[in-house]
Length: 73
Image 1 (cartoon, rainbow, N blue to C red):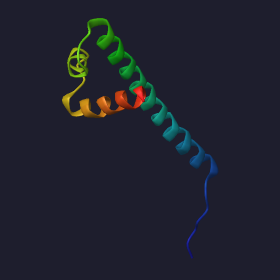
Image 2 (image 1 turned 90 degrees about the horizontal axis):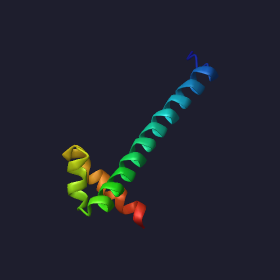
Image 3 (image 1 turned 45 degrees about the horizontal axis):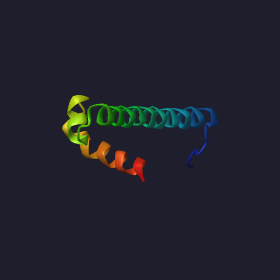
Image 4 (image 1 turned 60 degrees about the vertical axis):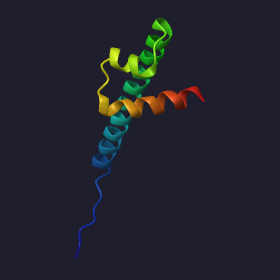
């Protein structure tokens, strides 16, 4: 017979860790979006140039460009 005993405390810790990771990602994304806006406005440069200035990796640039566009809508 299978033992399907559920450890509530273990599940709660896993849930909080998952939320913590999502919160960290959201915070990092918001900081990068705000920094992009600041560079674009202060130096009157394109999104691409602002990303280069902030040294955002090429493989992440399309992600942040879409997030920046979403935040403008």
